[in-house]
Structures are given as C-alpha cells and as structure tokens.
Image 1 (tube, one colour):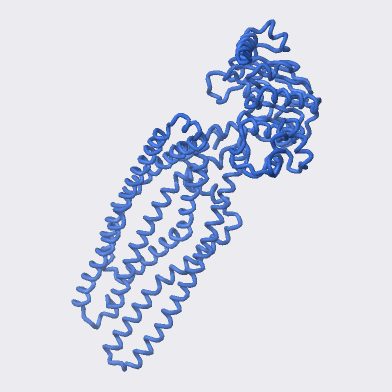
Image 2: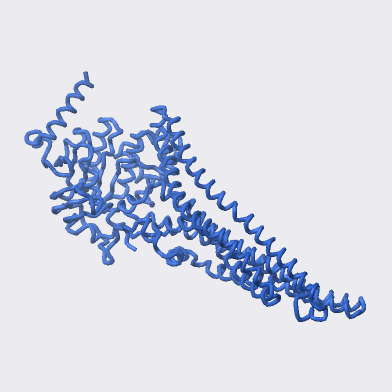
Amino acid sequence: MTSSATLKEVSKIGFFKKAKVLLRSLREYKKESILSIVFITIETLMECVIPLVMSMLINQMTELEINGVPASEVLNLVLIYGAILLGLAIVSFAAGISAGIVSAKASVGFVRNLRVDLFKKITSFSFKNIDKFSASSLITRQTTDIGNIWMAFQLCIRIVVRAPIMFIFSFIMAIIMAPQLSWVFAITIPILLIVLIPIIIIANRKFQVLFDRYDELNEVVNENVRGIRVVKTYAREDYEKDRFGKRSDEMKKGFTFVERLLAITNPTIQVTMYLSMCLFIFIGSYIMITNDISQMEYGLNTGKLSALITYSAQVLSSLSMVSFSLFMIMMAVPCMNRVYEVLVEEPTIKSNPNALKTVENGDIVFDNVSFKYKPDAEKFALSNVNIHIKSGETIGIIGGTGSSKSTLVNLISRFYDASEGTVYLAGHDVREYDVKVLRDNVSMVLQKNVLFGGTIASNLRWGNENATYEEMKEACKISQADSFISQLKDGYDSVVEQGGVNFSGGQKQRLCIARALLKKPKVLILDDSTSAVDTKTDAFIRKGLKESMPGVTKIIIAQRVNSVMDADRIIVMDNGEITGIGTHEELLKNNPIYQEVYSIQSKIGGANNE
C-alpha cells in the first residue's frame, strides 16, 4: 500500500489484512484477549451441556415413575442431578464473570493503544501527508471511528466467539436427539437467512456513505469554531445553523433508514424461533403419542423433546447474535478503512538512516529548485529558483499573495521536499539531516500564530524545554513581548487559554517570535510574523534581531516594504518565480514590481500621516 492510496483503494483490501494491522495495537493485552475467548468458550459449553443433563434427568424420572420406584429414590436422583446442574451453573457463572473482566480490560486497552498509535502516526506526517486528510476527517477517525471499532472488537472477542460454538454444539445435539425432526431447521434457517442477508448487504453500503457524512458534519463545526468571529461579524449565524442542520438531517435520514432495516431483524428472528418451537412441540408430541411407550427410551421422549426445544432456541438465538454482530462489524468496517488508511500512510518526509546530527552554519543554497504540491499538478508552485544566502545574512522576501513566498521557505525546513533541484544548508542537502536536528536549527515563525493552553512560560519552552526565566525574559525583550508580560499579574506564569484567545494578534506574534528565538537556531524565518504589530514595534524587533543574533541567517517574509528595506538583500517574487534580488536602493532602480509596491505603500503611508 503506497502513501498515496485512496480510501477507495483501501476498501478493496481484505478484511483480515486490515484487521491484522489494527490488531497490532493489542500488544500487552494479547493475554487478556486470549483468556476472554477461553472463558467464553467454557461458559458457552456449560450452557449447552445443561439442557442435555436436564433431558437425562427428565427421562430417568419418567422411567422410575413408570417402574413404580419409591419417591425416596426419585428424590435422591433429583439431588444428584441437581448438584451436577448447580456445578455446571457455577462454572458457567464464574467463566462468564471472568470473561467480562478480561474482555473489558482487553478492549479498553486495545482502543487506548489504537488511539495513541493513530495520534503518533498523524504527528509523524509531513505537510504533504496532512494535506491529504482534512482536520475534521482526522478528528472523526480519532473519535467516532475508533469508538465504533472498539464496539466491534468487544463483540468479536465475546459474541462472535460465543455464537458459533453455541450454534455448532446445539445444532449437532438437536440432530442427534431427534434426527427425524432435523428438517425443521431446513425450513426455518433459510427463512432467517433470506431476510437477514439482503439487510446486511444494504446496511453495509449505507454505512460506507454515512461515515463520509460525519466528516462533512465535523467540517462545518470545525469551520464555525475557528471562524466564529467572522461568522458573528457578518451576522451569518442563521446561515451556518441552516448549513449544519442540512448536514444533520442527511445523517438522520441515513441512520433512520438503517435503523428501520435493523428493526426488521428482531421480529424475523423471534417469529422464526417460535415457529421452530411450535413445529418441534407439535410434531414431537404427535410422534411420542403414536409411538409405543416401551420404545420411548430409544426414540423421541419427553426429555429429548425438552432438550430439543432448548437447543433449537439456542441455534436461532446464536444466529441472532451473529446477525447483530455482523451489523456492528459492518458499521465498523468503514471506520476500519479510514483508520487503516491513516496507519499505513507513509510520511513523505523521513530522516536519512545515516542522517547528519549537526548543522554547522546558516548558509543556504537553492540549486535550480522547482516544486509542486501534487505530482500530477499542471503547474509548478515554484519554478527554477536559484539563490545563495550567506550565513548571517538578513534576507527580505516580498511579493503578492500567492507568489509562493511561504512555499519557498517551507523547503528549507523540509515541510515539503523539492520536486526538482536541491536545497542545501551548510553545504549539505537538507535531506541528509536528521529531521529533528534540521528543524531545531531552522526556527520558523509561521503566518498563523498558535499558542497552546497552559502558561506563557510553558508556551515559550516549546522552543527550549529547559529554558530559564532569564533566558525567556531575554528572548521576549528582543521580540518586544516582555513589555506587556511584565504588566500581567502573574508575569510569565500567566495563563494562556486554548488558542491564545486571551491575547491580541500582535501579542501572540511576539510570543511566537520569542519561542523561536529560544531554539538558538542557525536560521530564523519570520513568515509575515510582524503583520499584526505597529511599524515602530516591528522596527524594534528587527533591530533586536540584528544586534543579538549577528551570526544567524534571518529570512523575513513581509507585505510591508518597511519591514524588509534594511535587509542585506531583498528577494522579489511573483507567480512562483524570483523576479529580482538586490538591496532596497537597487530594486527601486531596476525592479518594476518592487517599485510599484513601494510607490503604493508610500502613498498610503503619506495619506495616513496627513
């Protein structure tokens, strides 16, 4: 299975092959799973033996009564068989309790490991892998899908083991006891299968569609939670409620259809079971009445008829359990496909087995680099890029929206690999470095500033988990964050709410810059990371970076000319290509795009000053 396999391709893979991959998550719970099967087998066998013992007791009591044996002997016989039945019941009860305990431990442990394995796999993905799955889809796989797999696994180690044993044992015993009545099963079982099989096939197809609908539903929720401010700004609450309502109605209709199908199964099973019992009682009683009573020991008798009725009920109830299990497994199969698809996805970015563990400096070379996000894309996002950035240089990158500025710097950290050409860092292909080492030395502040729930200090320590308060304070002074942190009651121990919603956009940007500085990298990339701060603060940040990190290569992506005009060199990008490289003064003389941007921003700046 290749890393580019689609869900449609995954669905064609055999069930057991996919189950084998998922069951790797059992690990330390294999013993509990096996014990669960053993205990359930014992419990089921005891339940199947009890009707046989009861039939023996009834037959012997009938024989003693016919022969006029004293009541005391009959009582002794009842006590002996009673003790045997009690022993069987106790064994069955103990085995059932033990099966419940170990199966619960196995199923909970399995699903816990599966969730961890899935999460670890997701965190190992490159941007290219993540682009293949939507965020809402990954959330659904981690929650709803794994929940359904959990239910199916519980059934598999309990009911799916129990039902076949009960069916086979009960079916054989029913035939042995009354071979002349075995034709009843030839009528009732096909009736049951004729109803159940089409329901199973239709429900399976419907489940495949419904779990894709879950992704769409979660996508609406995800968009609204992330963009709640925009929704409220444009007063689009009613529209979004209607959009969510439509998705919910689609889910409701789909599951209602499936539930109606499943509702047919129980009455069908009950009718079939009672039909079997009625036929056994009616025909069995007729045979017993018309036969010579002296032949009862060798033919059909009261005890055998009693056991036969019980076994027929067990045969049909086991089929009922199988059908219920199949429905749950069918519901889990699409979930298995979706979880399997993530588990077998191979990260497109991997460390070389003999990877370099040290980055000597921040010297960067793009050697005829081109890149496109998908192999079958018609157009390259970057085309024929050739740049040499010397270690310690400050490079500005400017260009319009969609000019691939971020794409260019993403190749340095190996968030993506170049489609053509090579990116070098410190004289080595970036693919030769250990990925963690590379990203520790190429510190990047992304366009979207993300803070995590905790404290300011815990967020800053993402850059260096052992950073002292003095080191954090120094980094925050450079990023101009210390000024507002020092005004907070708890300072660096102030609480950061999830997503950093209790801080402004500019404050979050400054904290993210400080976090990146704590890595003490060889290359620092600011991807439009000062867009939310005023020009004065922006200037102070650039001045701080220049004075405190003279040997670090600094790449600043910006929309404002003021943010890059004092860089050693400025790269102008347009439509995925470099259209100019030079100082601010040089580009003003010979680059039309830069001239236009500068002219427009100068006029706007002049108007604002007026």
